[in-house]
Image (tube, rainbow, N blue to C red; front, side, top):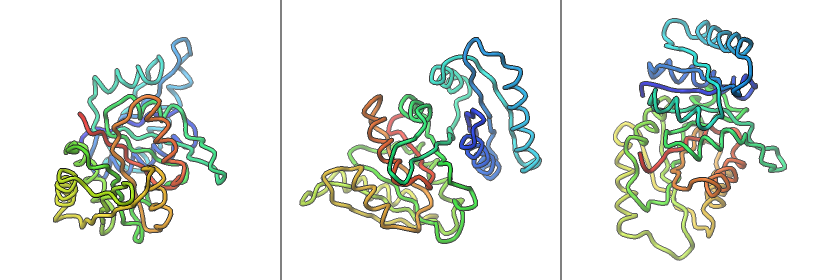
Length: 267
């Protein structure tokens, strides 16, 4: 991993994501770009000051080990993000989200979901309650990779997952497949699962997990809700647009304290 972009709007959850990004960038020796996007006609003096202050606080916290810069743009979020992605070619985007309330009302920021749905860059979503110290603490060393095993996964994206997972103390990857009761994996699916398991070895221990459910998202949530040792969730995104938003906002609602890494099957 060489370059990370973190868009911020100066809200508490975006600043929390920035702090998370700072730790990640320092530990991977990645270049960190702090991005703020303004509406076209809005004056940028105040935002530029806030952006510089955010960078200075981050540099003060991490010292010379952190390679950090800022970028201020005008325009709509997704087109502006795509422009930056095209010019900078980041390996990872990190964004914050509010998650959901105990009543399961979805409060996930529409900006975060829009970027997830319309970019092919791996994206790490940081819930408001997540902290990097929790991400790397003992007892939270399990990483769940949820996949339907239909197609070969993008190894470039999996490299990002492996690199992040290596920061966790004694990491352990669980390759989770959800499928209807009474069904079996196809020969290709079985090959894919074995390939994924071997991808993380020998550096990271891995195992297969199967949950039987008619609904993939419900099956993932069922498994996550039964565990208390998970530090990171990764999902393979194949949907787009409204379908993507519907599925992934629903999925995120049940594990609001866990970082969520969205990978893409195609480059």
